[in-house]
Length: 94
Image (tube, helix red, strand yellow):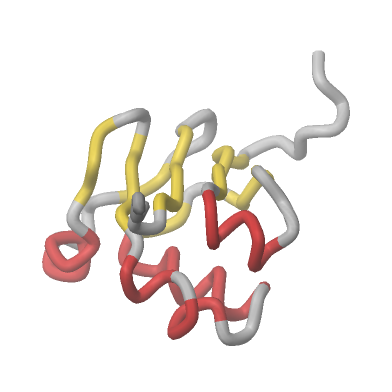
Protein backbone atom coordinates (compact mmCIF):
# COMPACT_ATOMS: atom_id res chain seq x y z
CA UNK A 1 0.00 0.00 0.00
CA UNK A 2 1.29 3.46 -0.93
CA UNK A 3 1.59 5.37 2.34
CA UNK A 4 2.45 8.66 0.61
CA UNK A 5 -0.97 9.03 -0.97
CA UNK A 6 -3.67 10.26 1.41
CA UNK A 7 -6.86 8.23 1.46
CA UNK A 8 -10.03 9.57 -0.13
CA UNK A 9 -8.21 11.51 -2.84
CA UNK A 10 -8.15 11.74 -6.60
CA UNK A 11 -4.93 12.29 -8.53
CA UNK A 12 -4.62 15.65 -10.27
CA UNK A 13 -2.11 15.82 -13.11
CA UNK A 14 -0.61 19.09 -14.33
CA UNK A 15 0.77 19.58 -17.84
CA UNK A 16 2.77 22.38 -19.53
CA UNK A 17 1.97 25.82 -18.06
CA UNK A 18 -0.07 24.27 -15.23
CA UNK A 19 2.93 22.20 -14.17
CA UNK A 20 5.23 25.23 -14.42
CA UNK A 21 2.86 27.34 -12.33
CA UNK A 22 2.37 24.76 -9.55
CA UNK A 23 5.94 23.40 -9.72
CA UNK A 24 4.36 19.92 -9.66
CA UNK A 25 3.45 17.26 -12.19
CA UNK A 26 0.72 15.79 -9.98
CA UNK A 27 -0.77 15.88 -6.50
CA UNK A 28 -3.55 14.21 -4.52
CA UNK A 29 -6.67 16.33 -3.99
CA UNK A 30 -9.28 15.48 -1.37
CA UNK A 31 -12.28 13.63 -2.75
CA UNK A 32 -15.13 13.88 -3.32
CA UNK A 33 -14.98 17.27 -5.06
CA UNK A 34 -17.59 18.69 -7.41
CA UNK A 35 -16.07 19.31 -10.83
CA UNK A 36 -17.53 22.82 -10.71
CA UNK A 37 -15.38 23.54 -7.62
CA UNK A 38 -12.05 22.40 -9.11
CA UNK A 39 -10.75 25.77 -10.34
CA UNK A 40 -11.75 27.54 -7.11
CA UNK A 41 -9.94 24.84 -5.10
CA UNK A 42 -6.81 25.31 -7.22
CA UNK A 43 -7.06 29.10 -6.94
CA UNK A 44 -7.01 28.71 -3.14
CA UNK A 45 -3.90 26.51 -3.35
CA UNK A 46 -2.14 28.57 -6.06
CA UNK A 47 -3.32 32.20 -6.04
CA UNK A 48 -3.49 33.64 -9.56
CA UNK A 49 -3.63 30.29 -11.35
CA UNK A 50 -7.23 30.78 -12.44
CA UNK A 51 -6.52 33.84 -14.60
CA UNK A 52 -2.98 32.97 -15.67
CA UNK A 53 -3.43 29.27 -16.52
CA UNK A 54 -6.85 27.72 -15.94
CA UNK A 55 -8.93 30.16 -17.99
CA UNK A 56 -7.74 28.50 -21.21
CA UNK A 57 -7.23 24.89 -20.04
CA UNK A 58 -8.97 21.67 -20.93
CA UNK A 59 -9.81 19.18 -18.18
CA UNK A 60 -9.98 15.41 -18.43
CA UNK A 61 -11.53 12.89 -16.08
CA UNK A 62 -10.14 9.38 -16.45
CA UNK A 63 -8.79 10.24 -19.93
CA UNK A 64 -12.10 11.73 -21.16
CA UNK A 65 -12.41 15.47 -21.83
CA UNK A 66 -15.08 17.12 -19.69
CA UNK A 67 -16.85 20.46 -20.05
CA UNK A 68 -16.60 22.43 -16.81
CA UNK A 69 -19.29 24.83 -18.03
CA UNK A 70 -21.61 21.81 -18.17
CA UNK A 71 -20.35 20.82 -14.72
CA UNK A 72 -21.53 24.20 -13.42
CA UNK A 73 -25.03 23.29 -14.56
CA UNK A 74 -24.72 19.62 -13.63
CA UNK A 75 -23.86 19.61 -9.93
CA UNK A 76 -23.78 15.80 -10.05
CA UNK A 77 -20.36 15.66 -11.76
CA UNK A 78 -18.03 14.77 -8.89
CA UNK A 79 -14.41 13.68 -8.79
CA UNK A 80 -14.23 10.56 -6.62
CA UNK A 81 -11.49 8.67 -4.83
CA UNK A 82 -9.21 6.98 -7.35
CA UNK A 83 -10.17 9.23 -10.28
CA UNK A 84 -7.48 10.75 -12.46
CA UNK A 85 -8.05 14.37 -13.42
CA UNK A 86 -5.72 16.32 -15.71
CA UNK A 87 -5.29 20.03 -16.37
CA UNK A 88 -4.19 20.46 -19.99
CA UNK A 89 -3.25 23.95 -21.18
CA UNK A 90 -3.43 24.73 -24.90
CA UNK A 91 -0.40 23.56 -26.81
CA UNK A 92 1.17 25.68 -29.53
CA UNK A 93 3.66 24.62 -32.12
CA UNK A 94 5.81 26.73 -34.26
